Length: 533
Ligand code: ADP
Image (tube, rainbow, N blue to C red):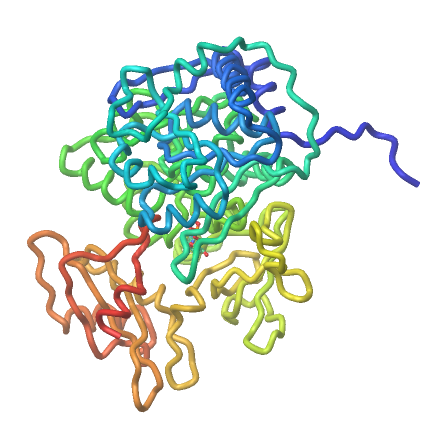
């Protein structure tokens, strides 16, 4: 027997409608590339979004069309998210830090019809001007006066496009399975692959990410996604904030510590989200300038492993750290680390160790760990294997790829190696392509890196496997040092010895000037392998 409840599709546009009706005075504060900080209320955001949607329709954009962005976190980018989704088009966010060749590949592959860009990216834009053989129209995110002759021919300006339109619009009823946004993986191996999110997956992800055991958002929250809107939809915050009526603070391209600190303080941000490297630089700045946060209560960290030092530094200033694990193919949230009711009572050592795990599963994402032979492993906190997931906001297939992205029995293979403890806490130990296979056993490059990074002289650590005649592979430790520091290899060996098994200890260490980083700010191990492998 079927239930007799209404069936209402889960649509992204409903989040904006809700924010406009129930939180009309709530603000989105944005730092523009000009440096100006502007504020819009949700009711103005909704009006501007309808004007933008009318402009997109006037430019011939229809259901399924891809509208690209090369843009920072601002209210305009937010308007693009909602206007595209609202008319059934697809907002394709692109990472401007990718190599121009990869950018061209992505633009061609996605067949983008329009490209909205922030004006500080004009030099990059001029390199891409010929993309899509002139079939793509360019729009600068600014006023008429922001246009210049270096921009692609026929380039339009955003603000006049909006002001030429009225804000009356009846949003179309869409299928909740329709695509609303597109984000390509960073493509460290092979070409980038497109992950095509649906209205349904996006709304369910927003609901779950707002829960108390996740980002814990409410209308009292002031949220700053430092993680860019081109990096997996700023981890879903542009949706979850409107769902809950939280205030949004958008840092634009001001991602250096002084400007981030100033905006965090000025706008009284309570929750900020970003990768570990951002927080290291912010904390260093605080120490140098002898500053403190007055309102910031929580930071949400993901994208790379949280190390003990970073956790302790935040705890020392009264800020709670939440680690999360996820990936582009998971919209991105997979697990979040919030304590269980008994976590604190199990002893300080246990609690500290638990806090450094990536987190526990949320409703909607199933997890399993599988060995090389495809057998499912127990959740004993030790048996590491391939992490596989399935759920409402997990990719089943990549854009324009006929084959499934999943295993024969329907699980997405994440490429990460992890174990899960009996309490459900997941601990990531490696990427499957980075794990070091030494004498038939696995050495976790991630754990070695975290251990090395906790040495007082070390700025950043990376471990790669190098061929070895006897053991097949051995770890090589590559380091950058903090300013003015030197490193005695023996002191590093002693330091590591207390934290990892003796047979993991690298025989070789290299100190380099600068760590090669990829487009999402993570260490680019492929370059290290080419250099040292
Ligand atoms: P994002 O960096 O936003 O999580 P990507 O798709 O670019 O998304 O990268 C996903 C990969 O990043 C994961 O497969 C995992 O290897 C790594 N990663 C994400 N979160 C963590 C974390 N908390 N700890 C360690 N590695 C992580």
